[in-house]
Length: 201
Image 1 (cartoon, one colour):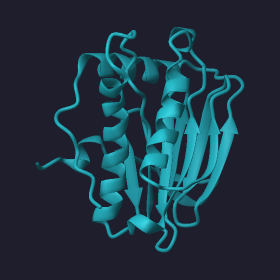
Image 2: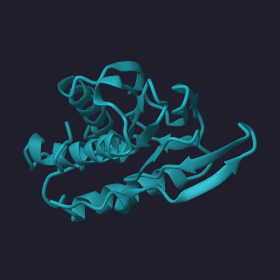
Image 3: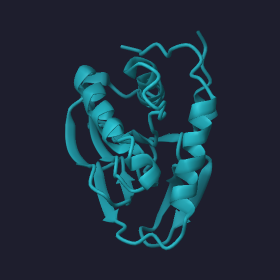
Image 4: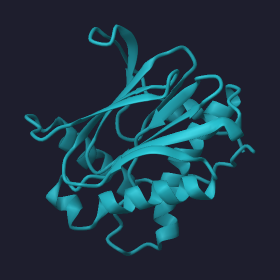
């Protein structure tokens, strides 16, 4: 089955003066991969991001996703398909670019209980548990993680070196993060994952 990898590819590119680097901003539901030293940036509330890189080549990527809140109606398996899709699209794109599966490492972030409406259904916890279990099943080592708690995070990921900087946002002065996550949550509940992505081995 053919899948369009580019459908969820982040398009927000900019130049980060502070880090003197080309950068890509990853919004909820998006991902990005690079083999040219692009800085990957995202802001996470209840969502999680997996940063995955090939330790030998330095090519890597980041996704940003959330399991849909189905109010307990669906089985965990149906909900997890969204997370599985987000992980497989990222991993497959890296493998397609030439990354070696046995050289992959992961760093995972997010899953904070930052919105009352999401905290009540443990969305952050479910997202965090999903990403840890997924990587364990796929035998991709997790070399760093910063999950759960009650604050949003801004994550800067440098795939070529594997370096990550996490800024804890104790006060979010604007509603942008919450609006994005709410809209993404609403989109998830009204859409369905078409088919399954085959994972390249």
